[in-house]
Length: 280
Image (cartoon, rainbow, N blue to C red; front, side, top):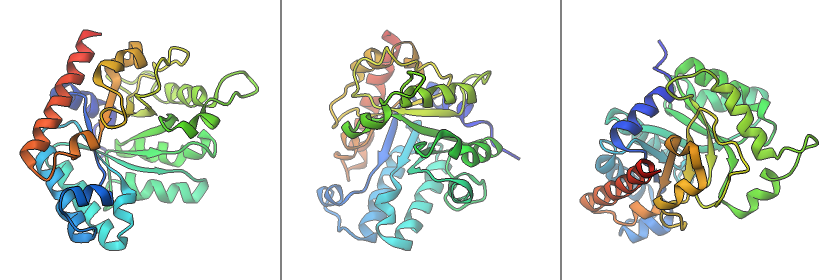
């Protein structure tokens, strides 16, 4: 049997726990800040600490796959355990892998993260549509079948993204706007929230020229260390604010390895975001 659709599960988690996603980004400098070695043992300690501290209280945890992959098969084993334990504790897991390819290769990526009995099965996966939105079709179809979701790169916060995402097509619409339009079609008629979301940077400022009302979640990196604050969200996302899932990574993780400090920081961000949404 398929899970309840990701969008419905995410809406409930956001309403119950607050709309906060915390990244699990064990890069070398952060391991060092925690007093951990840049090895598999340090990776495991870091990941377990984050999961044990936060998985029972935040809506979403988002492991960045690259920081596990760099340790080879042992790092992937740590990632598998982290995903399973986070989900068992009640957090939804968004695998930040940004996969994108065509045909059978895209199908294989989808099987890796979106097939229910896969070791790395996650509630949602970040994907890149820049081989054409249609190249994502295998992931879209398997996500629907499994009750999982996707977050499609649409308007990212890195400055280089604009040269692709703001480029205009022959019909006058930008590439980023085209991706949002595709997602609106995927989510049409879904309640209480569609399962196919977009990645839209919280640092981008006024996006009133884009239709963010895709009836799906908007994963918003940039809160905390990258410079955006909860109070900025209304100005960026406007009427779509209630569907925003702000992502904080270093802003929370810098308080480790103290589990209590991690929880306090996550709770503070969650409350700030909840207040910003309520005030809009």
